[in-house]
Length: 297
Image (cartoon, rainbow, N blue to C red):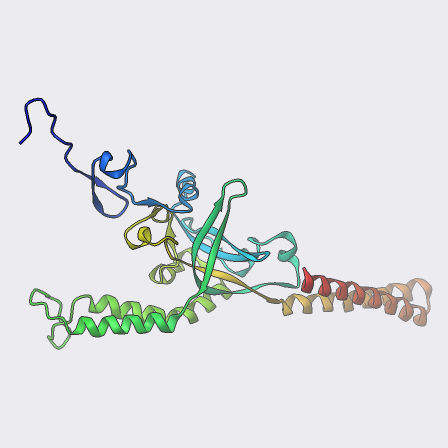
């Protein structure tokens, strides 16, 4: 009972967050006027809000090394008609790495958490961990076994033989199927190019994320001091053998052209061979220097 002179305490109000409705306590109970309806702002909260303002909605994350640290870059995938492959991933690197003989040749699935966001340079520093398919499949199989022991009389789903299936059985089996086939599909698609119509398999594996979701840490992610776990890809570097082969063939062709031109001008085949050998030596030295710089830079 409130006295006539005492104002009633404010009652809790419902507020819709990005995914679920949550009950907001009064501001005084929250330790301030901060609205917790959306959850806790993530490390990349400002970056994600900026992406939304620019009209970007979802992305794929690419991680690469910068010195001794890892940085993450986002590639927006809401546009249609594009093809995303290894050549496009090289554009995320520096100018030298795009044209180097030792450059990006593939990707590897990873999990990462955001450590720091530098607003001045718009760089996101992250902690990277390899993606363990075996552990995830084992966890899903364990969940399927636990689900099989649950009897729900209100479950209406049945199989072709008329037998009831456990709750969430189909979803768990679908996840298991996705993670079994995802590594082979990812390798194939990245090497041949991922078109805008082929993103369904990446979305099924949760490798396509929404900016509005990444802006907030909710539930167990908010309880963790490290924030949300995000799925992405790290760039794998190696020797571009086809590129190197093209350079060797170009060197031989250039030497042959020098031999032909020198022979025609000097009317001496031996002089033409001498000029061609010099040209071949120069191109070989240039190729050796390029190979050395590619290995050390």
